[in-house]
Amino acid sequence: MNLPSDVRVCLVDCLTVWLGNLMHYEKDLEAYLEELYRVVDDPPCELILVTNETGLGIVPADPMSRIFRDRAGWMNQRLALLADRVVLLMAGIPLAIKGTLP
Image (cartoon, rainbow, N blue to C red; front, side, top):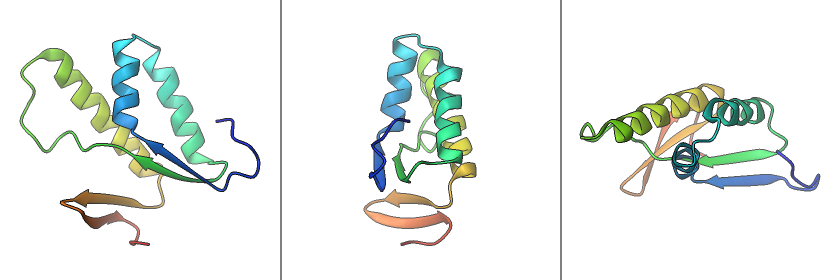
């Protein structure tokens, strides 16, 4: 991640859109994900990552949507493992999944 040295906070919105674009354009998904995990493991500044929860709904009917749902879930699990804090926002209400609410 190349940010100017004076950047203190970086907001990334939305990781599931990013993942979907990588899959659509048939990019080297694993390489991009590993780079993301590397940055999150040793961030250059405070990172706020926004993603969608994709596993609480119905099972998608088509194979590509199921692959996307699974990949997003695995990505979210790995990011949650690396993160100091995980907050689920449901109906506008923040729920601390990991760590405490700010």
